[in-house]
Image 1 (cartoon, rainbow, N blue to C red):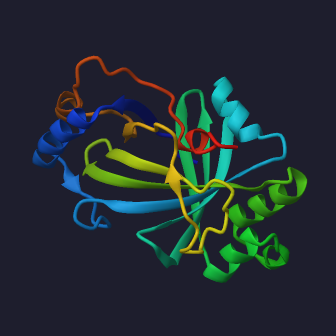
Image 2: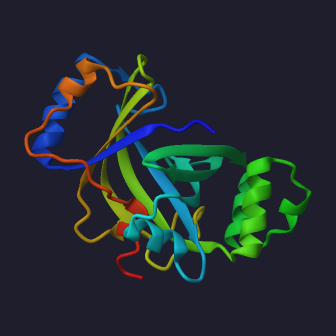
Image 3: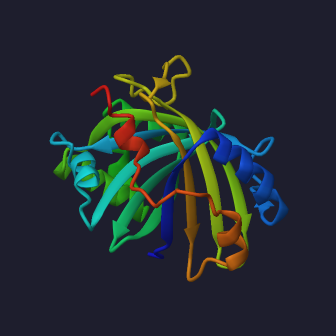
Length: 223
């Protein structure tokens, strides 16, 4: 499992405008983006005691969470993902889910997973049973992504963060989401071994410090 560095900053709308002027001059657009952005919908899982949520809020050093995700409303490509954090470094494992399998998980039917040999699906299946992981909330947001090859740098600006409240029917287009309180704009920087100076300099914004913002936690604001 490859671990990466990750910084998050809460930024203002004016900061976002400044970065949108700077970053295209030095970074590449994400080839999967449409008009420079894409829409992300995720369904996050947690246990009956909200372990993933509590560990995030408490700043536990080693933690993980599972989610199912797709982009731009396209349910023909759905991913199961496991995000882990250890000693301040982050990693992500991902595998493709068939639409029928994703819907079955949402509906609480895990029988098809018994026969699956994918390691991540097998792990998720075991934790659905042993930890009683269940769908907790849908998280929607818009992302503007930028790439820099040296250092495998990925810079994203995430905004319009919305929560599904009590609706966890991930694939249902009628599942309404609402703003997650006063959720801010989030600048995320991820890189491998080093962060090139040219990128570091372009990201300089006065008075912005690294924070531990969680979209999942923000979207649990209403329960």
